[in-house]
Image (cartoon, rainbow, N blue to C red; front, side, top):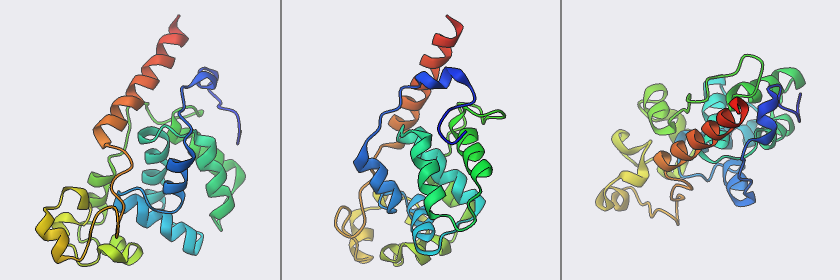
Length: 188
């Protein structure tokens, strides 16, 4: 289960492995604060809340189209509460290839998830201190903040905090196209 998808049609899923994107995700350098906060917390403490696990996992496999096995292996190596079956089953659920998988179209938007579950930005400010001076309105979307706001917070995107590694709409579209391709192949 940690290596092979339970739904056999996913064996041919068009993943786009990219070592740089995987590394950015592992180190909390994606340009999406809730993802980065979660991954930094995981790296520093070996733990993160279940909601953040789902957000970070969805981002990796759907927005970045990185193989779920890469995320599963990283969580296995870094989580202090790792459980082989739960970890593998959870990653397959998020990727859409497990026994009771999330629908393929369930693609968490990390900006909206951050605004919903960390509205005041306390979690992000704790784990991404370089963003601490941003107003709440921009804490989950620094890439959309006006230059004057970024300067006032002492942030230069790409220097102090990374620019987004992927455009969310483009990543979502790419994921939906990949899922449609395997759905079409399975029907043929």
